[in-house]
Image (cartoon, rainbow, N blue to C red; front, side, top):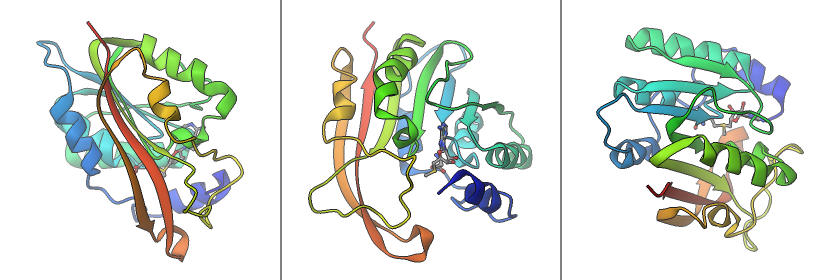
Length: 204
Ligand SMILES: C[S@@+](CC[C@H](N)C(=O)[O-])C[C@H]1O[C@@H](n2cnc3c(N)ncnc32)[C@H](O)[C@@H]1O
């Protein structure tokens, strides 16, 4: 989706991505480091906040990072409704730095907006700003020889090469790496996507 269209969609009352957490968010909670302090997390490309709010409901200190002001406004409304606090950061993942060191970096379906030339630096920044024992949970769309480009794919989205995501984490402990192909109806036309989901932990 292009920025203007997204602002329109996020400007509506209904939550385009729903208000319940992604399965990946639940798994991230299970993998989060055990700490006597409050877990601090950032959701990069948080959309309308479904996962960031779920993290806040775990008692975490959560930053929802997004380029979309409408998405962030909606995330704050969802947090209010659920009685939790969310810190929202309007930023572009292409050049963003994290507001503070975090224990968890989470991103579902947004890292394709980080242009290929910026990835090494941005993954490097996010890794560096993660505490030892901290976890990254990343869902990235990938190129796949049998999956045509989705009809709603835009010019500012750049699929990852297969295995590229894991390459950014060679010096971390990869907990799990999964490759999937799935059906999607976003944009109104059924199509397929290929993706890789990676969970990795920063060594102590
Ligand atoms: C597929 S949506 C996923 C939203 C959310 N993670 C979820 O699962 O509900 C991708 C999100 O990435 C955001 N986005 C697009 N470009 C971005 C950028 N350069 N930096 C940060 N977020 C971006 C979009 O506004 C959109 O909300």
